[in-house]
Image (cartoon, rainbow, N blue to C red; front, side, top):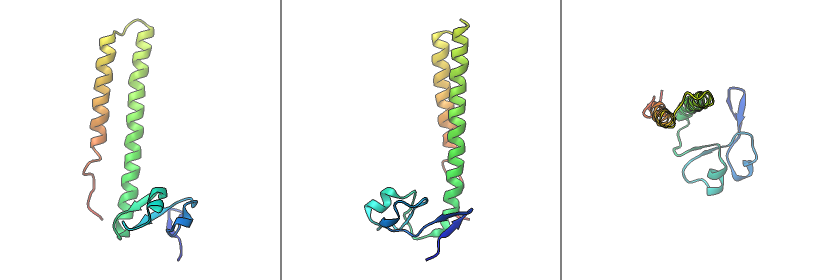
Length: 119
């Protein structure tokens, strides 16, 4: 069986002996527990047409994670700097932290329901 090519990377056929492969795709909900545990991707249906959606969704998720980390660290660094200058209060830092947490959660919620149908 030939490898599935995804942007110049190969996804090897699935079996427990391929746990050491660079990319490991488990297809089928009836696969062995060890194969599902070590898989990079586990498709729970025998439908490879969902693979492009999965790749798009995982890239969007990674982008949102990076945005959230960057925003959160920026808020913390700004308040650390303001504290060193004596311009920040404890209550201001707490409010900024809670506000940043809420914005991070809302930013992550953008992924819910995003492009759920298969193209």
